[in-house]
Amino acid sequence: MTDDVVLITGGSRGIGAATARLAAGRGYRVCVNFRTDEAVAAEVVDGIRAAGGTAVAVRADVSRSSEVERLFRAVDEELGPLTALVNNAGTLEKQCRLDELDEERLARIWAANITGPFLCAGAAVRRMSTRYGGAGGAIVNVSSAAARLGSPNEYVDYAASKGALDSMTTGLALEVAAEGIRVNTVRPGLIHTGIHALGGEPGRVDRVGPLLPMGRGGLPEEVAETILFLLSPASSYTTGAFVDLAGGR
Ligand code: NAP
Image (cartoon, rainbow, N blue to C red; front, side, top):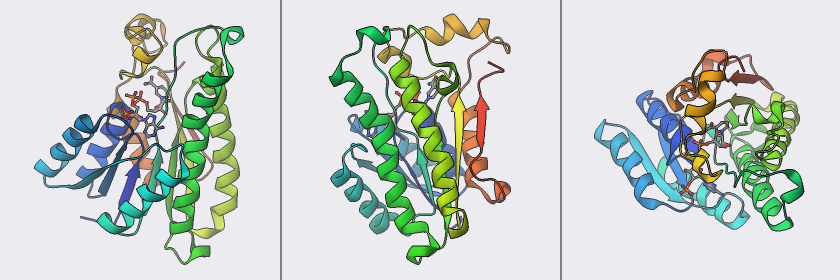
């Protein structure tokens, strides 16, 4: 058991859930944030507790500042001082061309994928930075290979939101480098999770995976391993870095 406390946004499913389980197995006390589905979040927490770990589930929409403040207060009170944040919550919508996007959809994508990580990173810095009397910590942003590829004919809005997140990694890493906080990014490619159903193609990984250099999609657990590395002292001299987990794509 360590004194490490990690908040994983969107920790109830997919990459977030795999990260929550792995972190708990390595001794972190874990906050599993979710937005809508309490039952799946509870399943992750129950699994961690059954294995002897410590975890809580907290509902909050990370794109709303009042909910983010409540989420971080819950971590303070239930788990202790935060030492790590995984900005994992993210979403996408039906595949389409850019000329079919409307204002409302753009606002939803920017809110979940840009505003959310910004608000959470700010709340984490106010707790972890030595400037605020904290003991330091680490942030990992979960971006996407889409930031480099642009996702044409699928979701350029989603790709652009991850591009914004990549810029945030670079800027924030430099802002807090001398304050004990490291900020890094993982950029997964095609990973077997439920997010592809939101785009209207649940079988997308099975369709595209065989066409990738490694001939397959990735597993949430493979992403979780790199996230844990970037949170851990094993990467103590790494900040502002981007790790591509895309099977060579
Ligand atoms: P997922 O299985 O759909 O899980 C998404 C998680 O995010 C869920 O726990 C969901 O909670 C939560 N969430 C969504 N919007 C939220 C909000 N506004 N506030 C709080 N929680 C919210 O997705 P995933 O594939 O694991 O994706 C995780 C991250 O990896 C995302 O940032 C995604 O863009 C990125 N990524 C995924 C892939 C891939 O191929 N899967 C590739 C590259 C990058 P509820 O279900 O309760 O709403």
